[in-house]
Image 1: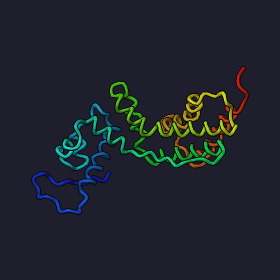
Image 2: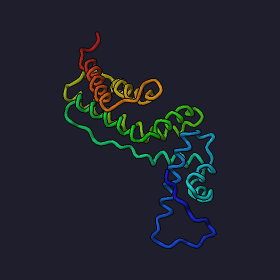
Image 3: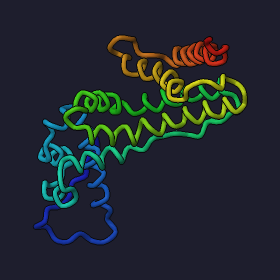
Image 4: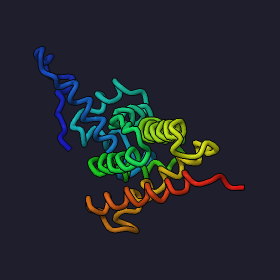
Length: 214
């Protein structure tokens, strides 16, 4: 991680036009997420964050009232990359969504250990975990819900389906594949991902388009 040193309080006032304060702010947030993923909230300290971001502790305490406040802002700073996907057909939408979601997760390797760490501490720190869910998981979940609603309106899938249950069914496979990769499953290639996306989509759609159970 590229850290930005920040001058101490004893140094002369910086000349205008140097964006060091903004860069230091981002360096602190980046360091916070890295250490949070490594050791968790309980073991993480402001001293560790300051050292990794190459800033003074006072710089952090001036901006955040607590470690929890710092972590919450760092998580909120994670922008969910969610392009609008609406091809007019549920199958094409889902395949595109699976590939886009997977690529986004692969491009941000810190997300996986961060998610696992927060999940393991969710009982002790539920508020912090909820910030993570609201920032990264919920927007993606809502996209799947909208896809299903549009597909129902077009008559592509059954009208009696529970949106919550269907969305869980759609998200579950990609979430498991993501979490299990490198532990239970080998790393997926682009060809593997393409095959997985299409096979999973066709399997799920076969169930969603069938007749309602009697």
